[in-house]
Amino acid sequence: MSLSSPDINNTEFLFSIKKGIARGDENSLELLYRLYFKKLLSFAQTFLNTKEVAEEIVEDIFIKIWAKREDVVLIQNLKVYLYKCVKNAAINELHKQANRIKTESIDSIDHNYHTIGSTPIDHLIVSEMLQSVEITVEALPQRCRQIFKLIREDGLKYKEVAEILNISVNTIDNQMAIAVKRICAALSIKKNTASHLS
Amino acid sequence: MEENNRIWILMARVLSNEASPEDRSELQELLNGDPELEQQYNSLGKVWHAGSNVNSGQAVNNDQQQIQRIFNKASQQRAMLSEASTVKLPVKPGYSITRYARYIAAAVLILVTGWFFIYKDLIVKEQTGAKEQVLTVKNGSMTKLVLPDGTQVWLNSGSKLTYPGSFTGSTRNVTLVGEAFFDVVKDKHHPFIVTTASFNLKVLGTAFNVRSYQNDRTSEAALVRGKIEVTLINQPDKKIVLMPSEKITVKNSYAGQTDPGYTTEKTDLISLSSIHQSAHDSLPAEALWIENKLVFDEEPFESIAHKIERRYNVSIIFKNERIKKETFTGKFYNESVYKVLQSLQTIDSFHFNIKNKQVTIY
Image (cartoon, rainbow over all chains, first blue to last red; front, side, top):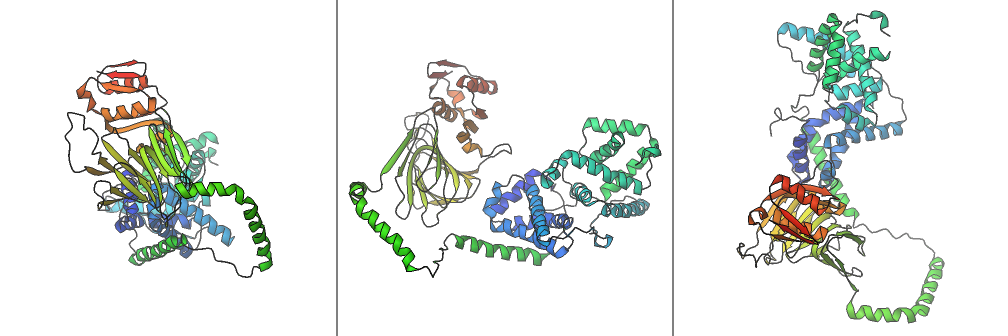
């Protein structure tokens, strides 16, 4: 199964992975792991600050899925399910630790971005802007950053994020607005009516 | 504040591909009044997509050690899970004998005084074994029951289930004519066996649908959850294991012998297929009848007619041979026979006539 062609957000594709897992096909689980592990790890890290703990949590989820693989057919939306599991496990872990969440430092950013610049000059400019964006994103308030990353980096839909985090689509609209506004400001985009900026 | 937020909300929606056509035109209008902003919004767009991981379906994580660790730990967990059902509760040491003595004495007392009343029942049990129960459901209705072990059974129209008063012995046996949906209580040491005229099903703890009516051409078993082993009555050495979402269809060897267009074959025709479940339904198509829905999935009219007969308690006669073999797909909930037939008419033309409980198709 080639990895570059299928649309990983395609429900049919996820469905065939799901069926493969239920039948005990190891390749299917491995595929699911390769496609989602890093994203789920990233998501877990928006809750927790230690990478090791976050990694263990995500590993446990894949272990459980394989251990009870026959039951996987009962899951309607595998992708949303994975994210929800991570969220629940991360929150449980937080309760255990009873620590306050620290904002991640810039150093721990996962540099996973693929730049798509057409000309070399384009590439340079885009790369500079990207850094600006990264810095701004990491400085966002926790919830806002979490939502923004799920939508932009992981390509989840508003509805899916709403289900995973148990919030309304309205909230997502507002949080995304905050993020976009700040990013634009960081990229020195000024509105004409500057006096209205808060 | 509200109006100023609007442009950011719209920008976010468009960049995330969540915008409606109205959103897009609204944003365009807002940007039209500010060409500088529009240009910068376009560059924002370039940065946005450049930095997103969305289309990186490439193998982003290929840690072989990690994946191996996952498989190994999962095997361990599986081993523990299957053991759990056989683990016996440890007998706690240290209970004082005097405490038990009280209970034992009381039990003996009850036994002695109650002997008269239970003696008669015991005699009956000895002679007939655990009392056999038969539940018959007429056409036009449906019922649900709970078996002595807690297994839930939904019985469809025109079906008959035979089961014992209590499950003794090494297996739990029931006999079915017709259609039922089973949600079996897990008991690894006492396999649940469903006997029909066409096949026997051995299950461990699962949810599945069985359809084996005498006047149908085929019988089928569809598995929702768990695992079942199917043995054909006519070929007892042939065993087929079903996995979740799989369905087995067997041609009934006694069906259609009076039908001139039906060739009799010695061997049973078996086919394995997938069950369909749409995202909106809680159950696969094969089992939706327990929610009182009439469902057929690429079924020939002849077979649909049987379903209609049982559900509405009518009888259907075909005066049109061609339409009998036409296939339809449909889902109905609480519709009248008239409405159902009307809907089918829109797909393929035929005429029908309903008089009392007699439906004629021509």
